[in-house]
Length: 281
Image (cartoon, rainbow, N blue to C red):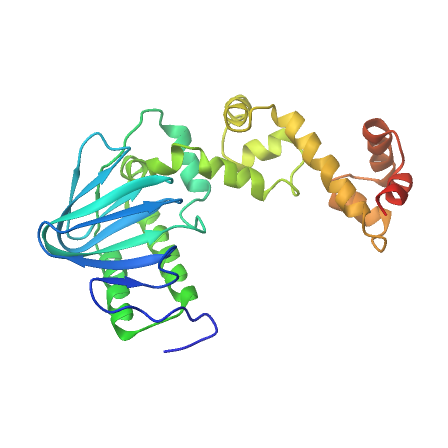
């Protein structure tokens, strides 16, 4: 099976790598009882047991965690972990390098809880079980489409949010909270789109005060200072283009009128947009 999104040939045997073995997106690993498979990852990882049983060890877990067939558990980024099969079986390891598990709903969960929970498997029910086992089937068939696997994982996460309670989801996604990656992702994704603190707070579903505190903890500065710095850099970058009219740049940078844009530039740069453009070019 081939398409424009094809990936490297799937390996046959104990491990099936769907990309560069040094940095895979998805693995299907099989093992006999007592076999141990160690891994290190620079992103959030989800381990799904397709069959058998295993103990998961991770530096952020206080003790090994037992996981059974049709259960899922997550591992925080920058973690060393290992799967030790206690009964012969097969596990799916998904490396969420594109952070598709992170969304506004995850930030909402983070705002609801304060305690730290790690290493608690979630039992998977229908129809999510079918999605998990479809990975093994398509790997066996030799499917090489990276887009397909990404879409299937997105479908899995959507169904998780539909079928599980906040407490269950919080436990599963807790590793995403440990370094505030979900919060940071939303901020960075909107840095050239939003220009007011209240708009950012609304996007993260936090109150203004909670947002301010969370922002300082993550970025080490106030939202106002960060937004101002990012906006100034956006203006300078846009003015480098000799083709874009001033009124278009003004609108793109969040100003309601060109005079407002001129006043901002005079205040923060000591020059008009036209003068800045000459310097930038």
